[in-house]
Amino acid sequence: MSSSKVLEIRIGAPNGVLQVQVGRVAVDVLRSVGYFGGAALAVSTGLIDPPLGVFTAAVPVFKMLTNSKHSVIP
Image 1 (cartoon, rainbow, N blue to C red):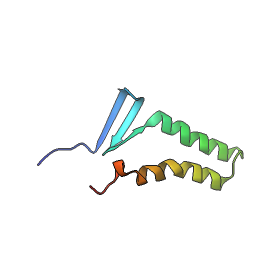
Image 2: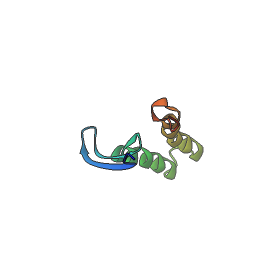
Image 3: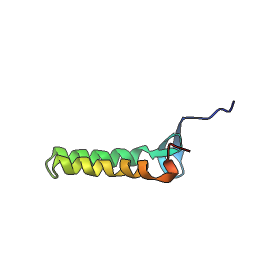
């Protein structure tokens, strides 16, 4: 029985300061907080309408789910 890590947290990773890897998907935490925080700030201050903010936030998630490299099915 082989042991595989499902969750791995890297501090000081080469491509980012704080990186979390869940399975095959690596998430740069600071970049994600900045992106989604900026979208939330733009919606909360009224710079953009909420449907546009939801669409803007959903695009990276949709791209990740449709990318064959990150496919759940082997």
